[in-house]
Image 1: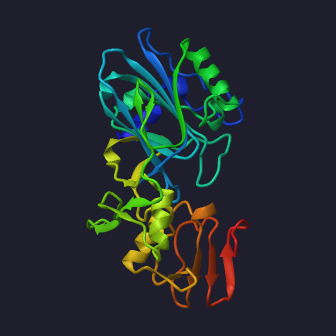
Image 2 (image 1 turned 135 degrees about the vertical axis):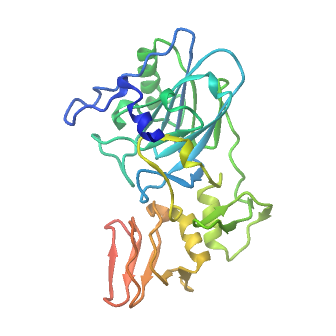
Image 3 (image 1 turned 30 degrees about the vertical axis):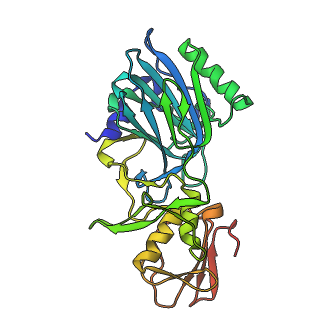
Length: 330
């Protein structure tokens, strides 16, 4: 049985109740052991982009690391995020007796109160992972002290019977536990790693882990990739991911990274206005919302792309009209 399905069945304490029940019903945390130290980790998003998706090619997944320090005391971890996330565990992972995962996001660009959050973890056995069933179960936070933090800490303390050790950030690169030390943010805007794109026979992959260089004028899309994902694009083996949906490799990377990937492959070209001209049949990258949206030109005779354009504007040359989300700026 696949790890994601095993994980979804692993915790009866967090079983998904029928729709229409009270928003907090079924949200009880599994009980920690008497010896366990409880940790509460929270972030709006990871600062790196995952090359593995959860459940859909149209959902952009972020990622951050959890490094477990050596020691004998068992650890009980509650990990929260706003955006869809894969937490990557490494180090003395055998110390983790349970990790409880939650996210506010249940779809590509939003949250439904009756839907399952999109979240996962890698590097840990499925029987140690539990999922909270709905976004309302626990509220993420990125600052302590704050009202959101106080509410969530109070719920965790009440349900586990222990004061949690807390670590939080807006865009997290990594967290070391149990010391709750935040990994320093990735490089600033002045110096970034170079970008390489490789074709491994399965598809193109962007690697930001190259020799640092100063940003150069004229590389707007490359610089956007570095700005939106300062932690880079992280390859995660789908077979190691325990998630609330089935893990899969992206056909096209999300957001700005996917746009750069398609430009580098020749499937898109950029005109002088920065518009993206579609040259052949493509899939829109996931997550083209807000600042990651784009303006596409679909020439006559070119097949319409698969996937979700998000907030992006798509100008169909043949019809002379636009196909866009109502929030797009066309």
